[in-house]
Length: 79
Image (tube, rainbow, N blue to C red; front, side):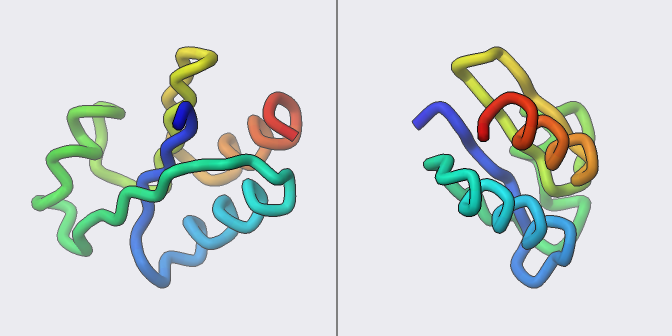
């Protein structure tokens, strides 16, 4: 799987991104993160910060945070 979405359950920003990926029919793997920022070591390792959502597109060599940026990327690049 070349697309990975780091997300938090019930996070409205994560839900928006997941819905955009589904609408664009993009296959992706979800990695569910811990609610505590201090426990998000994998997110920090991947993106340099602990916030979610984070999208990793291995095929294009892209890692990005911030839901608005991810939504634009999905629309322009993956849809």
